[in-house]
Length: 69
Image 1 (cartoon, one colour):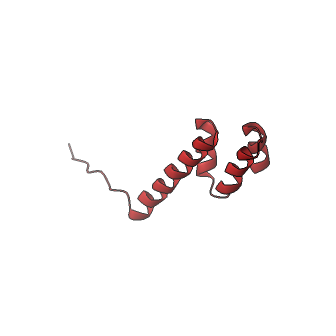
Image 2 (spheres, one colour):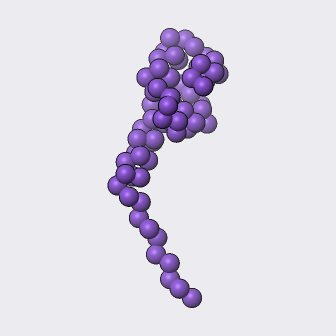
C-alpha cells in the first residue's frame, strides 16, 4: 500500500481563498444570506462594492442578485 502525501496549496491558491473568504464576510455583513454571499464572492466579475451598495441603498437581496447577474 503506497503512502499518499497531500499536496500543499500554492501561494496563489491560498491568496485566492483568502480573498474569497474576505468577500464572503463583506457580503454577509451587508445582509446577503450565506448561499448568495458565496455565489457572489466566487464570481470575480461581480463588483463587490456595487453588491454591498445596492443593499445599503435599500435594495432587497433578491433584487440585487438579479441586477448583479
